Image (cartoon, helix red, strand yellow):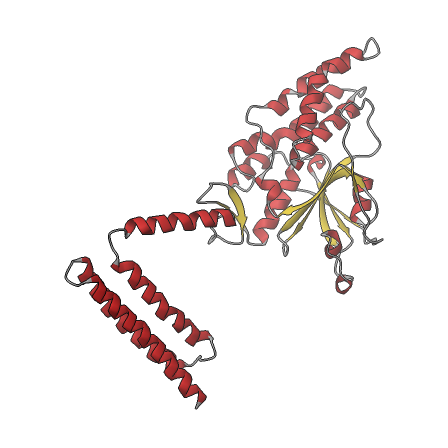
Length: 378
């Protein structure tokens, strides 16, 4: 991937930005290229995406007024997790009518615009989806269509441009952007300057993510990855950053959705899934011990001891000698408790007698703690 670096440290303060709607009925290309700008924030686990004319995007990033088509801050990884996919080839199917319409030049091009009406509707629907990868592909498709009209070999140029633009959509129906197979399938496309990403360095990170403070005024400019032709370099840039920071994509064990995690120890994507898992575990626990009253009461007594051990380790009574004594008594409790629990389960001991013994043991844990506290106060 070739990188074009572009620096700009202008800072004019933050102003309100405006969102405008792209018009797919335009018959003449507007001045300036439309770009897709991305900034990633490792600390805040956030991505910011702006789609608009390059000059408007740059002004907005520098803190000035800017009128763009899209401007959102989202959780880190959102772009890769929700990237547009196209298993049926719907995107590629619009290339042919766009190419063929170039031949319809009379009367006064009416036949041309009639031919591309279904394409305009398709692009408008994709734009209205709100997914930035689909929105940008829709805008750039129409921009390229208007740009190549009346150019020599315009149909071929349009075909090549849109094929490159849509290629990731087909690949990511089979593989996720972070999969090695996806990277291998796409890497062959990085062969010319049209696949280059630009890196802009603008303003300050705190200002860019809407949390400007005086103490952060001297921070280094933030990095913005910008594309204007192909998603490929942006995808590689994004996945490289994720790998560099040590984050990983995981699949939730509850809802099967993919999510970005700080490490491989995370198995659940949200609080909702964590609540669901807790409910499942509780149900499984109740089912497992529905005919076993001894185990739940033993576990409750064990955690009573364990919580007091934690206080000894980290609380005001933290003392190595006290902790060693308590651990020894906890081991005695566990050994005897497990033995008595098995007797209850086999019907050789009454449950009430076992429950009384557990209560006595909890009192013993309290007596130990009180004794330690008394020694510390002497």
